Length: 265
Image (cartoon, rainbow, N blue to C red; front, top):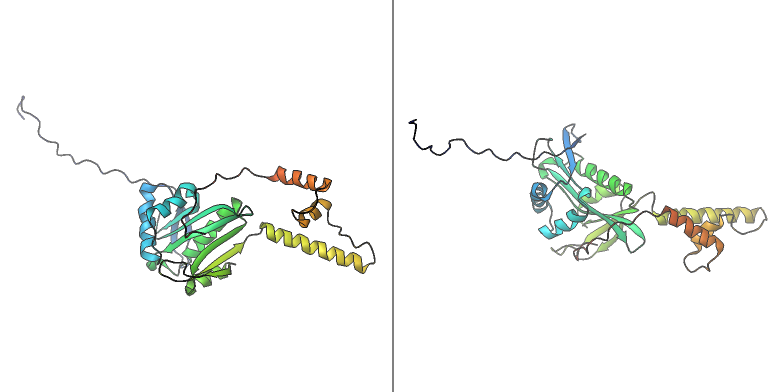
């Protein structure tokens, strides 16, 4: 090149931006293949995969604002499955939330579950539900709730095999006019289950004492008896002690989430 010649345009092609790779864990599916699983990372990376899976595999149409409702407050409760850790295209997803229901129970809610048709019958859906349920239970969930179409036999069979029961049929729940079954799975720490167990213990001890001819009053500790009596019971010293005990076990409440779309219960 002459000494004073001007340099031409560079022939070096700009490098493509390197794709972000996020940590994954592996599991073995129902056919013995090793798949990768991880939680939601960020919208730029994962929202397209969520949209594709839900648009292609679910009958109910969802828009980006519905996805953001879940992802902004509960990103740790959205999971993806990939054919391998290096594959950027997810083959399955589950999207959940966890918040207080009617000031009584911490309710986990499975909003969407989608598995690519080519990857079904490999226990991937079951793996995602189990993982989501375990994470929600660790975070304090007392129950898990979801809806599915009333005539979706495979989904009903899966959930009922995992301990879900049909709470009620919701008429015209979906935008296509179909009914849904609302399914619920109480967890081991469900307060209503605990109260039922305490009442059974109280009744059994009352029957035992009556049979032996003794005092028919319950031998249940007074702080438990007060709680069983309900909120209308007159306050007593035992009530104050029980409330102090409950206060010592109270965890810091979760941030109050934004109201859900009207079709999310």
